[in-house]
Image (cartoon, rainbow, N blue to C red; front, side, top):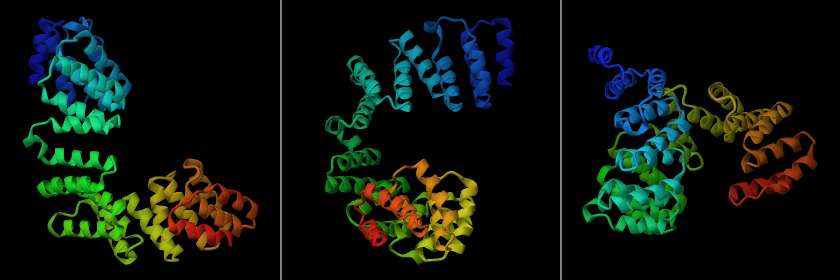
Length: 364
């Protein structure tokens, strides 16, 4: 009905840019992104006379079509044609961030802050962009200039924690992250905190943290996946049960299928490993982890010649991966290609104690 009214009005005034923009928004809401792009790019109105809605709908349509370059160029055209329009500058900054042009985005943000020093959204953007450009000290300074009540908000505490972790200040960072977590107990914050704990304390501590989270909060799918991965080398039985649960809930969960298969190879059970990894490879035929897992399973079954191409394909996609390289070297030795295996081992640098022992075992 709204579209009919707009169409009728356009019949009387076909060059009305505001009506054209409204019609484009209706098409956008109907997910007719190609129609929006075709209609708005044919408009001859001068850029400085086009309303915000025109630019926003066109940029968002490009974004929906995954045409980041066009979205960026359109936002740039809007910014340059309407330099006093703060919405235009925000849009261009956003598109530069989407295209990972953080240095240029920060430069424009700081230019706008000189013109609009009291706009909080610009201050927030500056802080985020300073972090993205690894100016952690500058980001922290900007963060500390925010009002105290803002600094105590969960999302700001989370950001502070991430900044401190990036600076290597684990104790302070963990405290900020915990303060954020206590306010919301969101699965996203729990995941980041668990990852930090696993890397700086122990994986066992991270497992206990997640189990405490699950005792009071719903079992988020991504957090369950992280939990199962942490359990791989801590409690294989619990890991297997968790992966099985994830697969029961979603039979096309690639990560769970592959990691359960990987777990079975570690338990010396190649038949069950092949059952699950083949399902994973149907979903993602060229995933280097799944290719490696299938190679491991075939190697366990003694099918050495069949295993070799899977390791080779995995390494072609992700060259010099230490774990896959070791598996490949082991298969080469089993295939009487010791010289080739030793050449691979000589290029591998490993620090993980498990991989160091594996290198020593293969060389012996």
